[in-house]
Image (cartoon, rainbow, N blue to C red):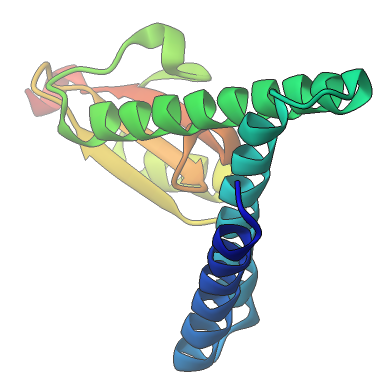
Length: 155
């Protein structure tokens, strides 16, 4: 890649990170946009450096390109899982951390206090009468997912 293009890409991501950080008045936004920009900058450098004459740079570029690819695939799978959790009529048991069976409303609140520990939770009801509870984060890798069955007396 030519030098002007590299400077443009780095400048774009840096200004996006700073500008959105200022607008949102948040360091978290600045760092998040900077991380996304770094991901694309490193990926672009790695792909460009695969054609280098230096074998050490080619080896480093191979490692970085593989890491970028793995992170990209992980991100896509995370989005697919999230869409499946929210929109699918059922949720597979192999994606659930634990099947907690049938609970009354009081038992469900006790479970929330004991397992979620103030992290927050979301519940998604499915067509087969079960519900999926996710404590903690929005994504499967930073939260805990549980399956709840309906009680017979409520059916």
